[in-house]
Amino acid sequence: MMRKALPFAAALVLALLPLGTNSTYLHHVMVLWMLYALLALSLNVIIGYLGELSFGHAAFFGLGAYASAILTMQTGLPVWLGLIAAGLVAGLFGFVIGYVSLRIVGPQFAILTLGFGSIIYTVTNYWDDLTRGPMGINNIPPLAVWGYGPLGEARDTYFVVLACVLAFAYACHALMRSRTGRAFLAVRENAPLAASLGIDVFRTKLLGFVAATVVAGIAGGLYAHYLRVITPELMSLQYMAALIIMVVVGGRGTVVGPILGALIYVVLLEVLRAFGPLRLIVFAALLTGSVIFVPHGLVSLWRPWRRRVDPAIRPELAP
Image (cartoon, rainbow, N blue to C red; front, side):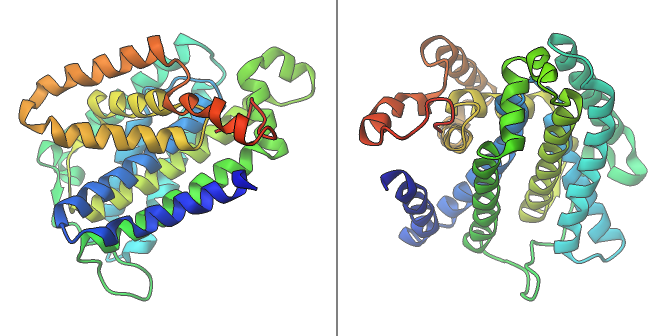
């Protein structure tokens, strides 16, 4: 009973959170939290559910941001259609890159994704006619919901991005309890054994990889229309490292972990902003300490308590 009530209670708290303050700055921080949470949840599909380490996920985030910004500015496409296009473009690139790289496992896969991400970053940085190069794109149309006007306040944007996060979090929860989700876990734990049981390992990995890139593209589109300015730095290694920190520190392979990791990252980012690049040392220390002392992420700290309260929670699926 408690296991079923907790997610609804958490969703209610998240929905009421911006109503507790009139600070535009705090609303802005909440929007960033939700945007990074959506992006971290998508990377969690690859790292946590498929067991592969990708260093190119930030590139799909940037592809979605640029696709939606360019299409809405140059063709007059409505913003909500631009977001759909952002997911499709990122997913198309994800299919091509995944089709080429997912037949390789281990460190070689991580290196390949790093190479693909670097190529996309370099092309974006030097294709001045389309992307305006290092200057980036500004004056991007604001986020708008179908049937409503542009969302001018950060609080309104928060509710839109929160709806996306909750929808994708529920999709991840349902996936892990479906036949496809069990195939994901089987591939993650032992790919040769999964293949011997009749699971198509490559197709399973490709399905998860493409789904993750589609969501990353939509997150990029939301980011572009919220901040209204984007640069190629969205695809840099700094963003990629931040995403891995969110997933690992929060707890990979869980639904709550990436959302918690995104919250920690955004709060530290704002608190340590005055230290400039030196704050990267704090993030590196956080990642190192998490790997050593809490290898399964911060969510693992409350699993023993949850199992005592509700013994029906299965250890292998407990978020």
